[in-house]
Length: 160
Image 1 (cartoon, rainbow, N blue to C red):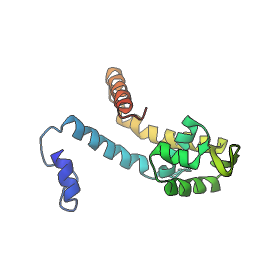
Image 2 (cartoon, rainbow, N blue to C red; image 1 turned 30 degrees about the vertical axis):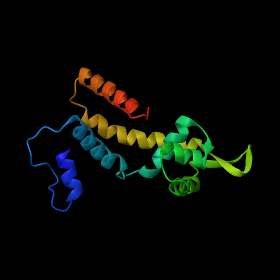
Image 3 (cartoon, rainbow, N blue to C red; image 1 turned 60 degrees about the horizontal axis):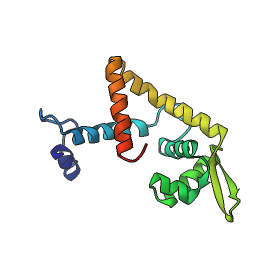
Image 4 (cartoon, one colour; image 1 turned 90 degrees about the horizontal axis):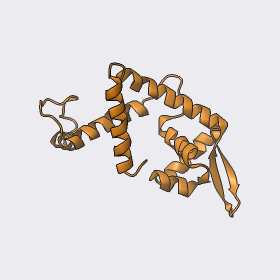
């Protein structure tokens, strides 16, 4: 954690790659992985139809089903104003729709559209490609172990 702490505390003076041969702790290795993956996942790719920051909203709707905006924001652990802005933009592209909430006429239910599912699938396919490339030289056993460990860690983090 020392390297990550140092990078956070003095980002302008830290090199882009660690200058230590020290093996990171498991926690630091996970944080490095998450930061590297986050950068790659959020990066724009030619042909993107969904802004990478909005793909998580489509993914959440595709997994959890239609829901009110506040429930969507809560499920994603995001501020409702942020989710509202993204939902509005996704609606402009017809990736989501708003239907009246039958329980409360003042509220709306947000749902992913067929176009949204297609765009999400394309976004995931594009990102899956660079992960596949990184794993190309890994053995089947290594790939299976990685999948199982990441699945377990995800569940232990409460985001399964």
